[in-house]
Amino acid sequence: MVRMLMTLAVLWALAPVAAALDTGALGARTLPAIERLEPESWWIGFRHPELQLLVHGDHVAALAPQLDYPGVRLLGTERVDNPNYLFVNLSVDPDTSPGHFAIRFLRAGHEVARREFTLRARAPGSADRRGFAAADAIYLVVPDRFANGNVQNDVVPGYADDQVNRADGFARHGGDIQGIIDHLDYIRDLGFTQLWSTPLLENNQPRFSYHGYAITDHYRIDPRFGSNEDYARLSHEAAARGIGLIMDMVVNHIGGQHWWMRDLPSHDWINDGGRFSPTNHLHISKQDPYAAQVDKDAFVDGWFSPGMPDLNQRNPLLATYLIQNALWWIEYAGLSGIRMDTYPYSDSQFMANWSARVMEEYPHFNIVGEEWNENPAIVSYWQADKVNANGYVSHLPTLMDFPTEEVLAPALRAAETPAGHSGLRQLYEVLSLDFLYPHPSQLVVFADNHDTDRIYTRVDLDFDLFRMAMVYIATVRGTPQLLYGTELLLANDRPGDDGDRRRDFPGGWRDDRVNGFTGAGLGAAQQRAQQFIRTLFQWRRTCAAVRDGRMLHYLPADGVYVYFRVTESERVMVVLNKNAATTQLDLSRFGEVLRPADVGRDIFSGQEVMLDRQLSLAPRSALVLDIR
Image (tube, rainbow, N blue to C red; front, top):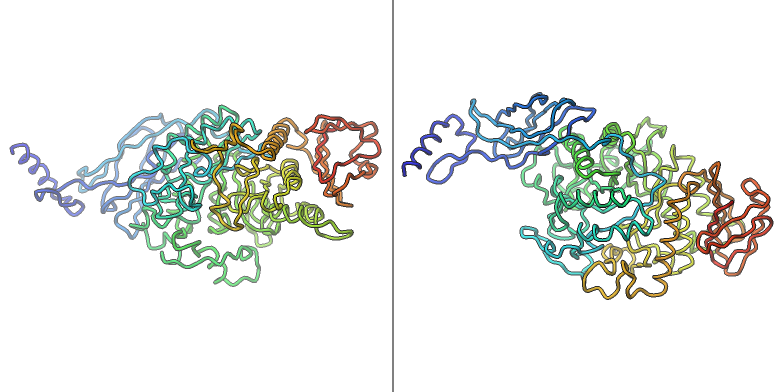
């Protein structure tokens, strides 16, 4: 009782802070809680020393922060219309020592709350890290559908979407970070040097949470995938195998259950007043010189769905938050790249500022943006160094090559007609539009991804056409990307069905009868496809001409498309033959590259062929020749 009375006396002495305090048991006053401080850590040595902390808690706007740490200065605070938020501006001297310190929150000179903050030293050479490039090959996984390495995190208390049901394409299946770590050797042995995972941040949504694109916490890995520490370990284990880690980020929207939505920082944090208004998906509005403002606004400010509130990046506090979040994850996880989702849907100037800041801090880093459009004129608009008619200046290094993806399967399926523009001519023509890009070699080329029907489905389960598609993405300019399971001929039976497209990788679960990782139970065609992919991408890692060489292609003729990759010391010849019969290819047309007595080695069979007069092409074949 005496102890209780002493406690009450101390609390009574803090009466001046009563307006900011909650009423506790026995009528006593309890200290206000700082529910969130983001980020809770930072790194020393960024080019920009400024750091802004978002502080959330009951009436924290009434508090005054205070800290005492050498080299860290409090520049001031900013308040918004919600008294439960306070933004604290700091400056971190580049010569500051790593360590921990407390941020104290005062009212009327009395400390009423505090939070610990950590300053870390950046890894040696962090600012000069190399991002993914044309020399790399990217393996894309949907974690929930790749492998379940830890069954203990399949169901986590407090998460609404808590059922694991592999029979339901839209439910969670249980794949996780540990499952990816367990199979990094498999990814490496296939020949891939970069790993892109669809988002792993918390998605505490009532349904469809498995895909990761409705983020509910920007600083937390979803515990059903693992922990922040697991993600850092994934990066470390991948790097030990020569594999970089690309993080899938989303700044356009959040999940409807994001903690912000329970207590919005400001009235303009979410577009359209926080009420659902659908986007018109009018990509061309960014370039259209005649577009009405109402249509432009509907594209940028509209929501993808009622469950994905659209962020207003024109709010400077939100813009800073999103930029810092990207820098935080690059440092924390040692990333080699970022894949930015729905790039054009966000405010254009913000995206320019965001990418500029990232590239300023990491000049050799890489970011690939998703502009899902089949028109190269629209896609190229977003690439750094593009001179746009409306004066827009972008700082985005790389884009997904959707124009090639859109035309690849139709071009392979279509009948070849004399003097026509279908078939292989479609591939030739879309590639010829590379003049629209400032840096065409800095595109990510792919046959399918997690949002499209699988390539084996799109070529009508035709193994020969599948081989052509794979050879094309592996040898054309740019960085190739392969969707998990493509090497096993995974297909989808229901076109347009995302759940069916994102099928489980066979062997990723303990009770799977077929195991793609070990080869157990694979059919003959699957084994052929897997070995084909392994041979193709392992060879690509060693071939400078394909990785870095200039591109030279010849107009397709008589069902045959020929192109070369050339450096001063290496030459590669690629021939796609769609004819159903053996075809004799006259080599006199290719004198610009071929020399008398050249010999080509087939990268798949190892056989050598003379390249003097004619080349015999097997029916419906994809031939890749190293030329000596």
